[in-house]
Structure formats: structure tokens, C-alpha cells
Image (tube, helix red, strand yellow):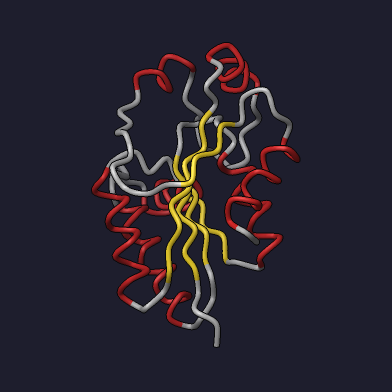
Length: 168
């Protein structure tokens, strides 16, 4: 059996990470988990304020699948070193490999346009506005990460860059 891989996506809202993560899931057959979906599901079903619960529940789901030999994709802002390390620990706990992927849009005007015009894919989720995206706490990476800047590129170009860097 091949060693499964956990593809750990990170980046600010509207950078293009979910689009690329879903395309990678389709190409590789990896299981896809979007933290926004998990967190909104917890809000809708359990009626409580969600903080770290979405991540912690997703760690368990992904760990179970990695243990079965199924590669997985985690799609989240993943803005702090703590969650980045926890994702890596999930993979390592079952002998899986992991790849950190940071998606950004370096063109401020293009990023703002994306934030202001995107459609919500998660039922009942309230998307952040531009001011909320700009003020979001997001730490610089201190470990190895594949960086994809989607600014000035279409989806196909960005995905081609990602698959080339991943060699998939």
C-alpha cells in the first residue's frame, strides 16, 4: 500500500485555496475536508459558538482516513503555527506524509474584488468582508511550504503550477 499524503492547504479567504484544493482532490482521489463546512455544520446542528472544535473534529476524521491509507486534503485558513503543527502531527501519528501548501493573492485590488464578488458554497456560512479579511491574524510560515500566488492567473494556470510543484 502506498503511503498516504495529507495535503494541508492554508491562506486567506478568497485567495483561491478551496478551488485548488477541490481540483487536487478530483485529480488525486484524496478525501476533501473543508473546515468552513465542518464549523458551519457544528453551528447549525449544535447551536453553539464554534472556535477550535471544527479543526479538532476534522483532525479525527482525517486521521481515520489516513490510517486506512487514503490521502486527504484539509482546506482551511490555517493561519497560525499551532494548527499547522497539529495538522502535521495528525499525519505523522499514522505514518502518513504531509505537504504544506499556502495559497495567496498578492494583488490587493484583485483579492478585494474576489472577496466582494464570490458566491458562498457553504450553506448558512457568512463570508467575511474585505475589512475582516485584511484584519485577520495570519502568521508567516516558519517551515517548508509550497507557495502558490494566484494573482494574475486563471484557475488552470494556478492548478498547473500547483501540480507541477507537487509532481502529481
